[in-house]
Image (cartoon, rainbow, N blue to C red; front, side, top):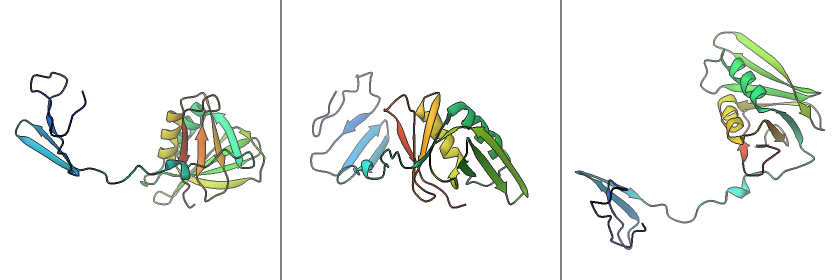
Length: 176
């Protein structure tokens, strides 16, 4: 049911528990639930153009294709030693695998794990990411395999399922 200016939802409408009022020219939204009233400011302007920050697929960029479940399992394994909030994981890309490396300064511990991957062309290099964010993006990709495309150590990575064009995520790198 669409609300018109100044309209409300009838109290006997079982789909909605709140009485909502949308003033005509106001930049505020009001919701009343029982004796409680919520007022919030509406967003001014349009939604940002997210396409400006999503890198285009670049066949010249370094990329690797890997089993999503294998990478998730390895990430969970290596970040277990980290107490830091950032959960920084360094990913060394090159050869026929990637190597995940973590180091806990607080506990003076380190761990690394190598995972077979289809690594594309480009010089080997190391880039850092927040492991928690990377795990979330692997889950969101929804596929068996995932491609991680990286232009360089400071540019965002493009992460996607090669079998589906519906989900593409961007992950900003962290300084190692």
